[in-house]
Length: 418
Image (cartoon, rainbow, N blue to C red; front, side, top):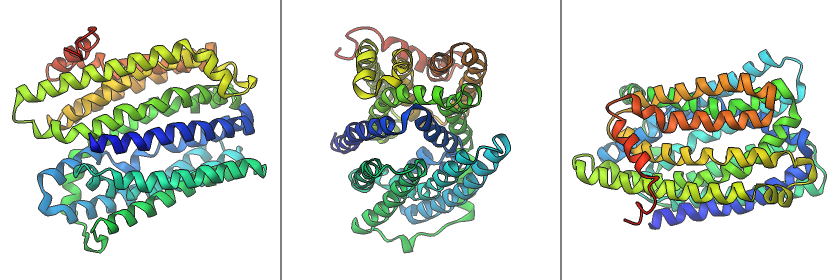
């Protein structure tokens, strides 16, 4: 609960300050330029999984099970993530030049924002803090950087800065956050100079993480490709409206992430006690469903008020999109709650299949719905694809069918309190 409290503080600060500053930026830039900025962010995000390499849960598990090899595990993780980040930067720029060769503004924005991938390699330090349930160090580092650059973004608005400076502020935030993680690790008694990389360990980690790597890529496809497709099919204005809605909708995704990262060690340690493992998972699913349905109901009912209050009249078309898109959170919450089970039971390959299925369905639905319904079509495709990959695909495998039943039973009223 203490660790969860730190994560909640982190996300509440980000949710409040980030939404306030983000809305201010959106009002300043307007739907078109705001759409251009969010297209660049979404495009770079498509390649972000090359930086993580699907190592997150695997490394935390290895740190828990092999604490004597901590320095080698962390050093190897940093080396792998650094190599992956350099590849991701090159791929993102090269791909954009291929599909949008004449869009100079998009190229500048993507080139600047892609540098964030290099600094994300230092999140390897966060693996150690998560395994030790000491996320307060990560909160200090990243929240400090976030608050500093929130002030910088407001200053950019006041001086009427050009669009590219907001992309640079995004990169600067990640750079300062990485420096904060290194400092936090040093202050907590760690010494990065003692880290070492191992080719044998690298091969071992990649052999276990490749399903999560491709699963992460598929997740990014159906989380961010919709903005890319909107840009190509409908233009920056549609991306601006969709981004305004998703900023409000996705701000709640910190809730399952924070809860799951805090309870994952407890679930992993219960792997040899099936009854205890299932009991903890049932409670987790019920909690996630209760929270997601409460959030979805409130936001959907108040969507028009929320958009009118936060954004200008230029963004009024985002309200119906928000009303639909918010319900994707139910399936996001349940999907995140399943991740500790997948890691504990070595079901990452099945997770990959589910995610790829969701990504394919998302792309196909976007191709059909975006030309007809623009941003609303992208929202519908997102909800359906999340539902399939996060919940309903579990029914097709005997190994995940028990999870599907738990997820379905979590919708029974009063089950959490029981």
